[in-house]
Structure formats: structure tokens, C-alpha cells
Image (tube, rainbow, N blue to C red; front, side, top):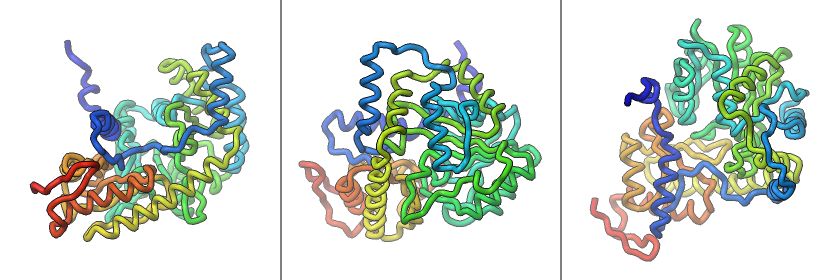
Length: 401
């Protein structure tokens, strides 16, 4: 039997594949250090756990409303007022099974075959394939230098076929936080060219050094072309709940996204919605604590990376990822990532998956001691002047390369 032509053009998620491989190695009892992860290791907030238990004990676990329950939407509206400064009602909000589904709903609702969608490089691994799935054309904008594009580079990629711009700030994989001036100019560009602006804000509170992530809503009185995506996965370490949302002052696009959701997943898990509501209504100290942990871990990682000669890195301003240039050692990031996992059992994500080869994405949401140990192993593996052997776990590993 033949598969569809589309199925052959869509690849596996490289991050999910690495997670599965790392989990398998750990199951074998091997001392793997996972620096490729995309989820905080903090325990779930008690407010979320208690809400899930309460919902389960009610024994009323039925279909939820297609676009999300009213109480959860009201909590998202309060969150939006607090963090974006705009007032929205329930018709301006859709709750989805993760921010990823919200992004896909947006693309399904706005992109026609052949429409171009512009986004910066390095990009989250799923963007290009998600755009292809809806018949769009991904336009990935590479910076001429480093890992942060300029507004001029973004604007030069816009053509008559451009239907949307997608921004993730702070970004996965690089922790790039676009400036207020960049966001303002992008808002003005999208308004003047009648282009959708979708902001993937899943990390927008996980920013460091006392900085706040600029919101596009700050720079316009008419935001009907803006859709903001968010969720509970990163802020609260609730990746397993799979609850995200989209907010727009444009009720028509939210309604369209709801129709798409109705014909795909029908609705979200009632238990997951209860947990998300609990997180949003509970103490927000968990977010502040996570931010402090991540900022400390970032500083630790940058310190350890500085000990590896020739590695270049732009300090992340947010998220829990660092995108480091290891091209001095191997310009083939797939080969380098595989080498580090095979030789010293450290998981990293190859930069080519994010649109820039020669780089590795290294996550610092792992425990600080694992960051230090992982970088110790990487440094040993790459340093030709290092001793011939190293202790990993309870075994002595000798260089055979």
C-alpha cells in the first residue's frame, strides 16, 4: 500500500528521537547526562496536582468544551491582562492540547497553498514541517552573522506571497530575546503589509537579568492581525498536561481555529484543563523560583563552556537553552552530537535541526551538577591535550579517537 506524498516530506522530531534514545540508554543503567531536554525538572505545582486529584475524585471526567472550559478561559484572560496589558473575553481565547496544537490551528486557519510564512533562524524544529503540512512555504531567515537576525534581514524576506511572520522570543534553541525596537518594527511591518504576526510566547516569563520580554500588543492600537500562543508546559514544568492556548483580539481567527480543533482532537482532556487551571490560580512563586534556578544554571553553563577553547556562544537572555558554536571541532553537528553521546554519554541536539549546522543546543534545565559533569565530559572528549582516560560513572573510559 502506498503512503501519501506529504508523509514522505515530513521528518521525525529530532528532539523527541533523542529523548527516546536517551531514555533507552538510561534504562540500560548507563550514566547518560541529558543536556538535550526541553522540560524543566521541577516537580508539578501542588495547586495543579490538587486540582487534578479533585477533578478525578469527582468522577465527572467527560468531554470538555471544544475550545476549552469557561473557567480556564477566564484564567487565561486574567493572565493576558496581567502580562500583555490587554483585556479579552472568552471568544478571544482557544485552549488547545499544547501550544504546538495552537500553532498548528493558527496555520490551518490562515495559510493557503503557496503562502509564505517567514521566521528567523535558528528556529524551533517543528516550524518548517508544520508550515508544509498546511500547504505553506517555509521561509527561514538566516542571520548574516551569529545567531540573531536583524529587523532588516527579516523585512527583506517579506514578499507579496508572505502571509504570516512567526516569532519565538525568547527563542528555542538560542535564548534570543528580540528587542523592543525589533518587535515594534515587526508589528508596524505586519500591519502595513496586511500580514499575520504569530508570537510563540511559551518562554516569555523565563527571561533573565531583570529584563521583560516585549509584547507586540504594546505597539499597536489595532492588534487584529496578532495571535499570541502560550501554555503551561514550560512555566510550570507541566509538559505532560499538554495544555496551551491562543489569544487574539480578532475573534474570527479564534473561531476558525476552534473549527479546526473540533475536526481534529475534538477537545482537550478535562483532567489536563483542571491541572492547568490549578496552576494559573495557584501561587506564582513556582515561576519565580524556576526563573532563578534557570538563571543560575545558565551562568554555570556559560562558565563551563568558556573552558572549551574555540567554542563561541551568545549568552541566552531567556528560555533554558544555549546554542553554542562547536564548528571548530566539527562543522557536521549531527556527527558531533552522535560522537558525544557514543563516546562520553552526553546528549545534545545538533544545530542543523534548527537551521544552523556546526552548533549544538545544550539545555540547562538539567540539575546543576549534571551540567557541570556533562561539560566536563565534552571538554575531555574534544581536548586533544586531555589525559587519555576519564572516569564516567563507575567505569574508566579511554580515548580511542
